[in-house]
Image (cartoon, rainbow, N blue to C red; front, side, top):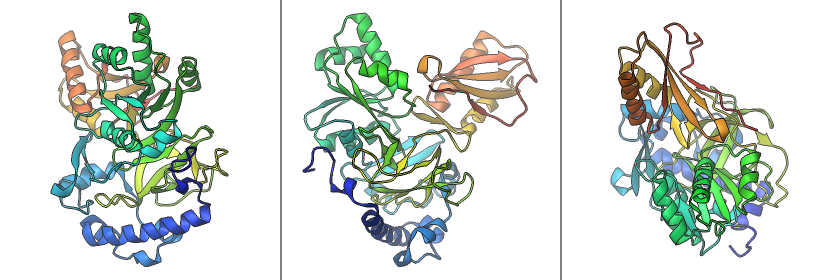
Length: 413
């Protein structure tokens, strides 16, 4: 990290050099996965790792996030996709689905230090981390990067707002990581409580969209905001640079954009599913992993001088699985709630973002809804989805017959 403008020299490699070096990494990764993970032994049986190139890579079947639940149930705990014994993995997580996520033991396993650096974080910063540390890997994904960069981390997690106000007042962290909506909640509550927050000047946000009006609101308070696109399976996929023109793909992954539901890469600029190959994880060497997220490749290089591929950022979901307050919600979870109550004839989860704050409401076709039933359904939603949601009773037959279990009607400025 000799140049403070860039995290390392990898960011300014020309694309030909990057392609050569990354495909050498990929050859090693394929050899490792094929030899040590039964799922990849089968998936790659006709692939010669020494002959890998873009065309050969495109011929490998995409393994989608939606496949993980089935694969892990068939062969617990990780569907034969880990290349190390379970006891040799650093941490084991459960994300909604349920999906089990392993974390290897190398420093900055999820590779988020680069994103923090691009967002202006440096050694000696104090970071309030409000992503969850309970069962899911979110808190650890960003903590690993912040600590690798030399920052001190406050493992606050989400919620407990009053306690977090005390932390802000007493410890005065100059950095934040978490969802943008929770940062705004904290700052507004500090305003109401008369707590000065002028010490906070940078943030790395994830898990939600960052509309221009929200960014402007933060910057009006002197807080510079960067974004990182990461998942619990892969870690960092892409991050925002000071140029703010799309998201730059992380140096530790290969990204392809494919036509949803297929293995086929699309033309530059065409919207498709983000498919990622992890080049750095020996524990969980995911090859052509379909995230279920939609994006598109931006033409050219970033004005900031970083030369890797850029994507437009999150543009929706390729399936009905959606992300609410940084947590994935799956159609199977909604169906599990509905099946838990004989009174519910049909259900649909509606996701909204009034005032740029995510909210979800489970609409239930019920003959005679009561407050007690609504309370019980709400508790079940929180247990299964790990998020609170409103409950709305509607008349039987009133929900549209369109096959939707999750209806994401959020709009962004």
